[in-house]
Length: 134
Image (cartoon, rainbow, N blue to C red; front, top):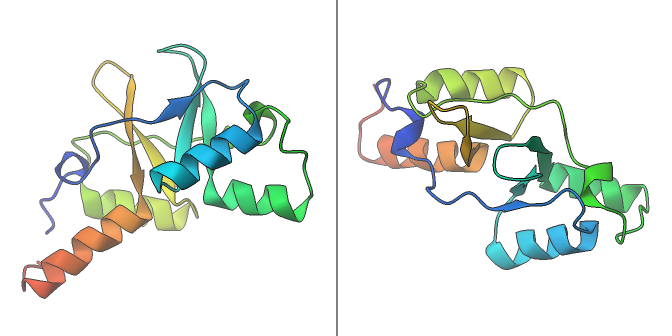
C-alpha cells in the first residue's frame, strides 16, 4: 500500500466548467455526474478554481442566488498533487489541510483529474479487505 501512487486510483476524465456558468448549472452537473467536485477553468490552460460539495452547502446556508456565476463561490486557493505522488502522503496532506478534493497536474502543469478523499478511502478499504495494507 505504501507504494501506491495517485495515478493508480485517479479517474482519467476531468470534468470542468467555465467560470461564467451559473451555480445552478454547476450543481446540476455534479448531481447528474454523481461527483463531489468540478474543476473551473477559463480555457484549457487557465485555471480558476473548484466547486465542491462543501461549497454547495455554503451556498445553500447563505441563500446565494443560483443564477450567479460559479466563479463567485468557487474555492480558489487550491493545493495540487501529481500523478506520481505517494497516495499515503497525499492522504495525510489532504487531512492536514482539511481538503476533500485535490486537482492533479501532469508533468506539463495541466490539470488532468481531481483526487477525492472518497476515492482514497475506497482504495484503502480494498487493500484492507485483501490483507494488503503495508
